[in-house]
Image (cartoon, rainbow, N blue to C red; front, side):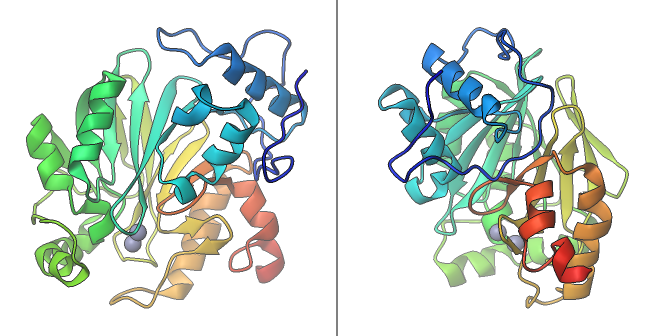
Length: 304
Ligand SMILES: [Zn+2]
Ligand SMILES: [Zn+2]
């Protein structure tokens, strides 16, 4: 069994949950475009080290360098501005950092049907379209966590391009969406168009692409209409700017509220389970369990 090391030393992945026990058999679901054998070794050695939650990390770099370096690259991918794909149980997720704010736009795909949703297309629309073409998936809809420019600046352009609907965020974020063109000018982004989602989302709603269903949680604080998407089966949450690896979202914007944000994390996110991997709006992924133990703003020690 290969020992996984990287240029920075052995990767210390902030991942502690396991979806199912490591087995000697393959843990990679069958599909046409599966990761290389090299990638499977990476996964297995990580599983043996019990610090790989459940996802397989496959970076574009995987095929061109040592597997270990790729694992490290995927975890700190934001630094490299490279997109990468995680294979989960029944879906896969491709992250594309977009805009000058390096916002994690996600393409979540149902493996059974090849249908996908684009979550938070904040900008760099051409790069997103290029990624979709390479992935060879059919886009069902655009999903939005909240109304900030870096998350929905490209939503209208993407929805128009694919002829699909926009779902989310919660209607309390309408005032942010209304300001998109002005915000875009202020931050020197490309054109950002105002839109009205076909559906505003609320606590308890679900969204669907192909056969995949994600639960919707209303998590105000960073913005009043922020929502989080959760795949219970795949143990994955897309949390936007609510929670980050080692940090939490800013609350100094109009209608931001620190107490609300802390409550959202503790009452909505923590109950999803320590094993849940989350993709934040910016920076590397982490697990809810790791943040509960170590996050200086919302961890259990902070609030005990
Ligand atoms: Zn934000
Ligand atoms: Zn953001």
